[in-house]
Image (cartoon, rainbow, N blue to C red; front, top):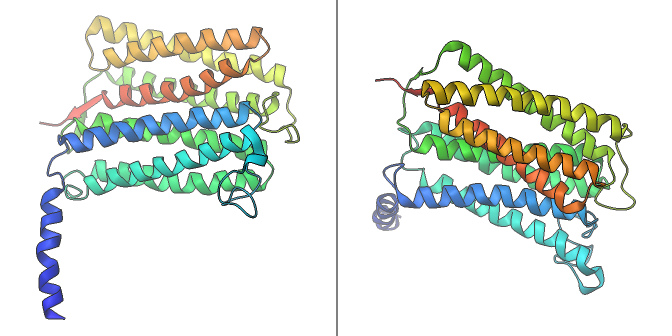
Length: 309
């Protein structure tokens, strides 16, 4: 008993020494970026599942069929697409777990990074369960919508980790005028409303994920107009924030300009898809751009404060 315990100590010590002792470690940077990219990619593959009608390509969960863990040749391309998305969920989870392990040694001095990493890992696990519920409920549009919103939130959290990793820990102070910070919060509210109405619009539209899946019952054409209003408000507010930050050389200037550029592309894609019968590729791009918009806004928001001297 004593010998076993003593022999385990050097191993644990070596493991601890191997773990990064600083958030500047290249391993944390690489794995955090990989986790972020995977979170965005799974939104793209999830969109492909829905837009190709492969939502029930694997009709059961957690296995693909009642008799097979993986898709079978009889299930065709829909089974491959759906199972591919499920497989990517495993990769996303592994990357999230790897980030948690890498920040374990610095969890006390970088509690912010440790908590963010735990949120991403917990969110991935929860998303896997929600994905299963989505299949078992026959692609209920409200659960599908929640599944997407949660994915966007995880992208934003992963982006926050990347932003905070390069910043010193501890108390922070505002480095922009208070009215500017308030305007950023209003812009965030417009972003949330835009995404929420967009999810309802998609839930009422033709891309249900399966020919037999139900819709949410709302008027898709009316919702598409309602979706554009907060979108334009979001763009107008971002334009003001970007111009003010650029003229006054405020800390968030670069990211506000990046956010403005993403929103401009998003508006163009939205107009294109609305006027061309909602082509699948355009809808998928629109979904991914919404996640990148949330990520850019989140990073820009972290630039409103700096570590207090």
